[in-house]
Image 1 (cartoon, rainbow, N blue to C red):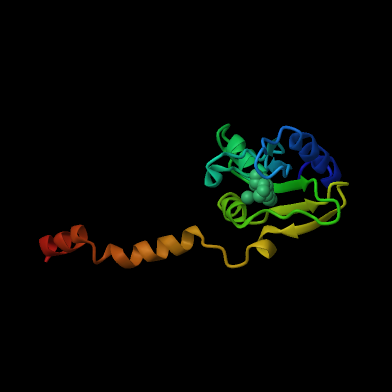
Image 2 (cartoon, protein in one colour):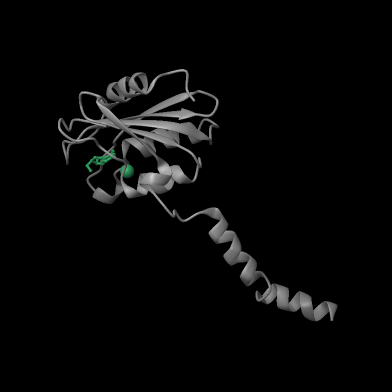
Length: 155
Ligand SMILES: O=c1ccn([C@H]2C[C@H](O)[C@@H](CO)O2)c(=O)[nH]1
Ligand SMILES: [Zn+2]
C-alpha cells in the first residue's frame, strides 16, 4: 500500500493529465502508479500521427517505473476529462499491468476524481501469463531438434 490515499494518487494523475499530448483525440488521460517500495510514477497519454504508436497514460507511467528499476506495482490511479463516466484502462494496458503485479488495485475516476476501485483480476480475468508460456515450453522441450539430438547421444 502507498502512504498516499487513492484520492491523493488521483490528484497526482490529474496533474499528469495536464501534460497529455493529444492533438488527434483531444482526450486527456493521467495516471499515477505506485510501486511496492512506495515510489510513485505518473504518466500522460502520448499520441502519434501513426495512431498505433500512441502510448496510453498508464503505459507511460509503467515504462517510467521499469526504466528506473521498479518492477512490482501495487496500485494505479487513472483519470480523464470524462465528467459523467469513470475511465478504465484499455486492454493493452491491462495486459501490460498484469506482467508486473498479481494483485494491483486500480482506481478509475471521473474528471471530478469520484472513483471506483477494482482489482486488475476483475478487469482482466484469465490473463495470458508467464506460466502458460512456461508450460508450453516444457511440452516442446522434449521434441526440439536439440533435445532429440541429445537423447540420441545418450541412448
Ligand atoms: O485508459 C486510457 C484510455 C485511453 N487513453 C488515451 C489513448 C489515446 O491517446 C486517447 C483516446 O483513446 O486516450 C489512455 O491514455 N488511457
Ligand atoms: Zn491503454
